[in-house]
Length: 146
Image (cartoon, rainbow, N blue to C red; front, side, top):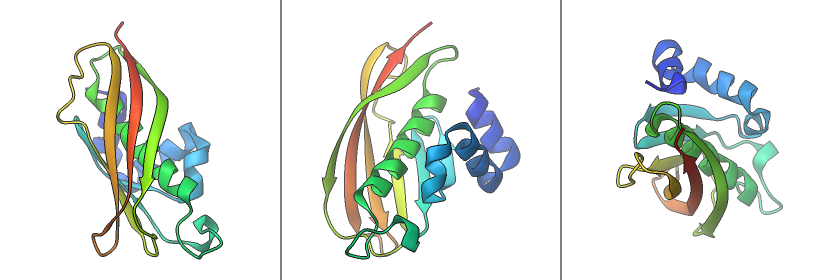
């Protein structure tokens, strides 16, 4: 079992999310809560706060990218074989609507072959508190087997 998955299962969402922000401090800018983590899936909630808004008073584009990358990265880490490594190579995003509430990023890698090396395109959808899809990302993760 992945070290991150073991930690998530042992300490719970709140403590795990704080630890993830200590490992990668930039994620703390969005105050994330990893609410689901398992092979092939991860979910990250981001509260609406003034600190992550843009000039329109909506969630900033980079905050949405940050949430998507955290969800995709955590999901990738718990999905790859033991001893494998990964790194994000790129991200393609689409802004679909203004995010005016808390948002939830959902990475779904269930259709990906995690047992092979190479680039994996991880889809992430971000929804607002009403369930409306406001953002999508396709994150290229490069996986190297040991």
